[in-house]
Image 1 (tube, rainbow, N blue to C red):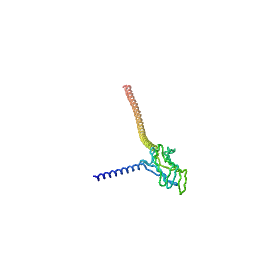
Image 2 (cartoon, helix red, strand yellow):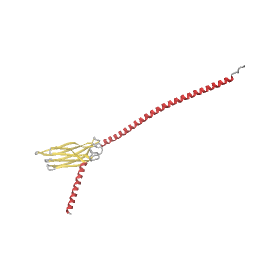
Image 3 (cartoon, rainbow, N blue to C red):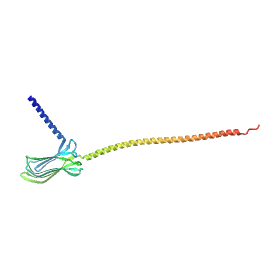
Image 4 (tube, rainbow, N blue to C red):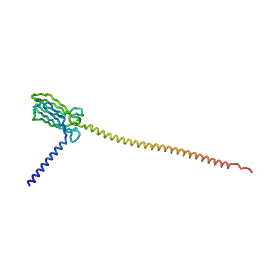
Length: 252
């Protein structure tokens, strides 16, 4: 009985582990991260990762969220006076718009410590094209026993590409309109061909009508001539009879 309970417990633990692993896989596939900055400046190593794809799409789209992860590491003593990461997008691909600002001040780091910042960016509608990150850093670092101060370190770098859904929508509409134009062109060509056939039929019927009309006129003229000849013949015949009857008799 105890063995059965242990077996049941082991099965439950294994099932829970598989469920957790499946959840991690789903979350990993939902967002694909890319390293956009991996820089080593005097005393500090900076790495910036951000979402490049969401839900297996080829590019991030407006109205979606981007995850940004910033890591700071050092192998020496570093005193940071000011750290700032700002991420910009571009309205209509041209107008600069600040979408994220991560700021930290007055902290100390050494070889056993590090800093990590994780934040999420909402990409507004009408933002597309390449996003842009900029780091501003003021710090002092102990290098070879000498403390060096870097009052204004600035580094800019391109980040996630945001899909131009507006242009794609216009292209889709254009393709639809082009398809409608092609359909209308085909319909016009069919109607034009039908009209040409009807026109040829009309010309042929008109020619037949003209021919028949000419035949009717000739027949009418023939009938009139026949009537005239018949009347003339009758008159001639009557006149002949009349003359025969009226001829004076010979005296014997």
